[in-house]
Length: 184
Image (cartoon, rainbow, N blue to C red; front, side, top):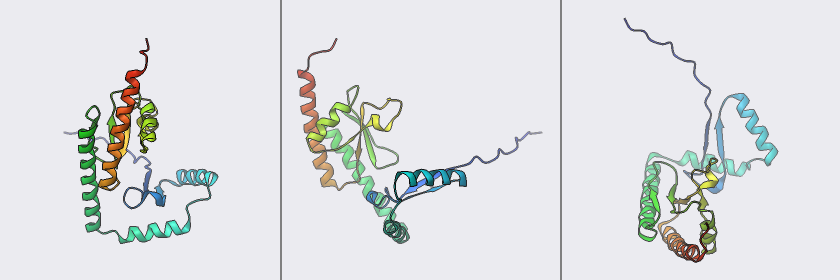
């Protein structure tokens, strides 16, 4: 004789999506699928923060989403996979002190710097013409302070230029660190 537990009641789920990763991040159109209470709370908060997404942006997003087919999506995924691998190879070649693993999802490569915090390096990168996000900005508990997020959504030539500049910024930053008095 076997005993089977009765099924648990379904938990409420919230699904959030946008066209940012598939189509165009600048379009700023997204959606939420949730129960009515959650939906109403999100709509009220969004209305308090801004006037909403333009009708033109929503119409454009709807047309673009309708135009996507399996062939286009497969080609898009393949291009992003090639860019991800290209960026990972560039980081490995030009920034060997960094540790970067290929992500299973998303459009960013997270690189770990051999520092306690990447915050000061972010400023050096900006002075060399590259904006990257410090890991601490994406992690509330501070466990990723030594990481930077590198997007691979750009064209290969842009990725190459960005890594050249990041490497120059890293060299300048390392030189500044070496010249700084030791803290005891």
